[in-house]
Amino acid sequence: MGQADMDASGPVTKKICLIGQFGVGKTSLVRRYVLGQFSPKYQATVGVNVYKHSDRVARQGTEVSVNQIIWDVDGALQNVAVLGNYLRGSAGAIVVGDISVDASLAAMETHLARFRAQLPGRPVVVALNKIDLVDPSTAEAAAERTRAGLGLVTVLTSAADGTAVPELFRTLASLILEHGT
Image (cartoon, rainbow, N blue to C red):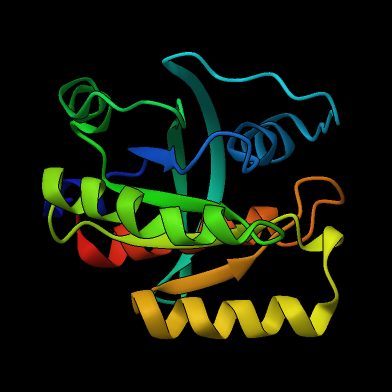
């Protein structure tokens, strides 16, 4: 983000991507954040779903209005070229894993590597979703392992009950503003 973006009185607009395996709750997180809704019915994303949400983010003692263009990317997408097209122009990403499924957590590294290969240096936040399905001590242990293994800000979330969902998106928006992307 350039100086003109910082001096403008209007909102800052940033594209962000949610990436991760299918079934980890990417769409549920976005729908909880943008629409305030949750549905227990699973419906796979095909390609990408795009949402827009305006929020206020703390920055240097003030609040900044941020329009987030949120790309919810198909978790089964194996074609790296197509994935690259979806990621292009993204200011940052949220890598989502299902905390109740070990294979999902292991796959986050692959999704992170794909994002970093396309957009090195862009801010990334990890969401360990579905904490409502595990014991709190299990969730904290998984978060510590993830923070240590990936070296990223890790947020424990539940799209089902709304735990830390706004904080997840605001954390990424703050990192993007700090990074200047």
